[in-house]
Length: 414
Image 1 (cartoon, rainbow, N blue to C red):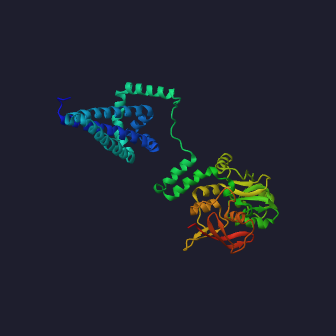
Image 2: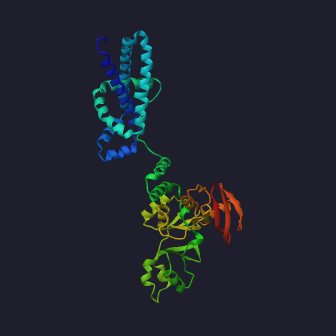
């Protein structure tokens, strides 16, 4: 070593520090890669992504290779630094070399490259894989031996090694990913994706048309009145019943009947011939299950019943689609923001829709409408002018519709 010029020793030391930085940065970059973006690039046959995936299939071998290389160059750098210090300062230089080399490695071979790799993992990793994969093939026997002894030590300590499965996301984790990606998605798609993820927790009770709002045909009405109602109906399907919706006898598809309804001889018996069987669903049926049932049974309409078989409401395929994508037609808004920051809200709105429009977090595990939530909170039928505190919101009732809350003014939390 005494015959080797100091300039050559310093040059070799610099190369070793660069190699140490390479191994440190490579480890951080490869472990910080976004696995879902990596899979996307692999499907597009991105060359660097394919190599990265191959290395990450066996992380134990990858880590073994990187640590083997990193420790080797760091120990060799320490030895060179000691030789340089002895030649420059004698034995007193050993302490100086140890302190200086620790600082240099910490800054230039650890903190700086790992910070760069953490902030730009893709660029660093995709460069590193072209060197790491050939190096792994070259040093494979040594890497295998190191992993073997490491695994033996772990087993002696009671650690059982298992194959690490691919990264899986729960529904809540996936929801967080979609929520965090909001700025990169058009608002309508962002809202739709979040709604789809929420679909599993939603039931038909959340989207059904309540019993009192069901439009249907009563066979006890005069035939002229029934025909007029059919001609002026805004709906393509109507439930047909006798006296009460609980005595429903079928569902009428109006388009099938309209060409024949103009005949003077048209009777209630003629109408019965065009009735389809009613599809009944329990009130707690999940929406995603109802979608499957609609598809399997080729249905677009169902009546919702409670545990006693009484009709609570109706739900259509259109209702579910509107739950996913929003209202299909423009109508009067149920939520109107005021200049003072308050909101005028129709109390018939569902809590889910109100939360979606305003980004509030009112509870959805109880009453399904704002009117029901207010009634449950007050435990009585309120009057116009009543004020209350509801989940941190100041609510003022500004209109009643019979025994139901009509309009309210809501002041959001400050």
